[in-house]
Length: 349
Image 1 (cartoon, helix red, strand yellow):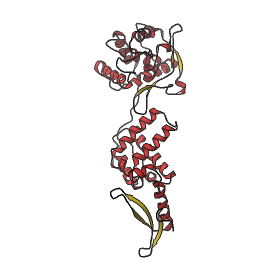
Image 2 (cartoon, one colour; image 1 turned 135 degrees about the horizontal axis):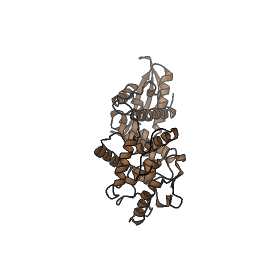
Image 3 (cartoon, rainbow, N blue to C red; image 1 turned 45 degrees about the horizontal axis):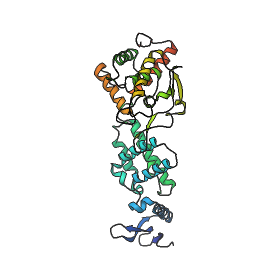
Image 4 (cartoon, helix red, strand yellow; image 1 turned 120 degrees about the vertical axis):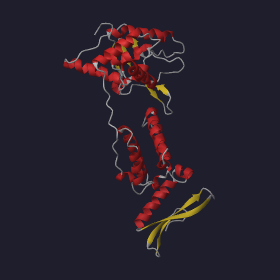
């Protein structure tokens, strides 16, 4: 039998069961009391006792008198950030998922008290969300309980019997603009002064050079080679661990670092934007696109403005800024296959 301060397993002859007994601090009286849980076999009781004693070594257990699910998830996420397993952007994105889980009862419940039925009920509740969101919730819960098992905090993984529900919604497809829609948007943008449509050149660069929105908004005047008519794509805007927009150290992917020729019909638009950047105050980085009152442009704001523009002027509601990059790719494929046609800019294909 083990020391009582460490917990022990004993046999209850009157009940014909094995008891796992362990000390726990009562947060109200600040006194240590002995708690117990009964099992049919000695092996089960010992395994349960081991999980409790492993938990007691965790700082979360000491602070919360148990290990709440979302606190455990945050702790694991922070460890990944501190060891460079994930980027600050990923940290921020996953943290939002954890905060969403924390608004529900299971989020504040101790990990060893959560049942598979509760987890299934929680996921089923979100069937009206997109499949991608449901997948994120499922993946975070699944990985968290696997970590808990590996650390010896649980006897069994409750996620084993949990099924990922399918969304009631159809998956959204990112579609490209048709040639006719692209022509309408192009004509509209080219007819507008930059003072009345501040993102016009952002959208044109995306549509006719295939850059991601974050890549366009990260461009600097030093990335533009006017003599050779080329743009070097080196970085992208991203977010840090608390959600602030920052300049990333590189592009979204390794292959994203590239040098692209500037189409002849975009040359004047690029020069226009460079002049604005060179003469703009509070623009020490010489960003091609720089808001007056903030360090960097918001991808969300640029996307919202595009959606508002398309709906108001053309009745188009299913296009985002990412669709403009997709439009470029679609026109390239159509051109390679010899199908379709290209829009005109200032009368030029």
